Image (cartoon, rainbow, N blue to C red):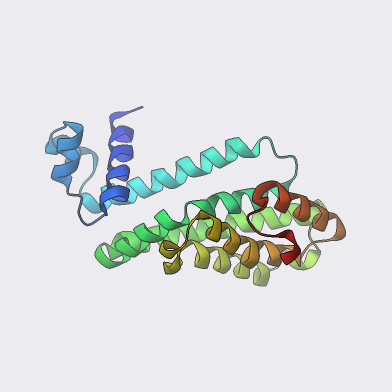
Amino acid sequence: MTQREIILDHAMNMFVKQGVKAVRMDDIARELSVSKRTLYELFSDKEELLYQCIQRFTQLGAERRQEQLKSIDNHLEAMIFALRDMMSHAPTASRLRRNMQRFYPAVFNRLEHDFNVKQNDTIRKWIKVCVADGYLTATADSDFVVRILVESTQGIIHSDTFDAYDTIDMLSYISYSVVIFIRGLCTAKGMEVIDSTFDKYFGNIVEKKAL
């Protein structure tokens, strides 16, 4: 791991634990026993460091999911698994997002743009493959459906109410607001996958009869 990556990972942990406003560049340099000069040679200012921290956090999460998805044999199940995994990190993401929006709006706007583009592309690719595989009806492959799914997942990830809920409630939230919507787009073949996937990943968290 490079010095830059070590700094990003350590700074990210500090931002999560202490809040983006509270952590200063001096604090990061002291915690890592590096000079402020070294820190500023790698990152022009705190805003750039914060932006790069979130980018790396997002990238590492995506790489971890891709590794886990290697064991999943169909794209519809992979889609549900990935959405569930993203929602499990929603409380941290929501808290960081609110703090950045309040204290570092320029960083917030850069990250929002990046996230929107990537999520839109990812969901569209999933839908196209699932339609081609016969899991979703052709109706699913439309700008309207992609927009609903993107806005739904964004709404859950960025919901201010997540701080009041625990993990079980979060998983209930995604299952009702996203999984059921996807199920409505499924063919008979896709419904079988959704139902077995629901049991596999959610278990007793939400009663299946809710579907």
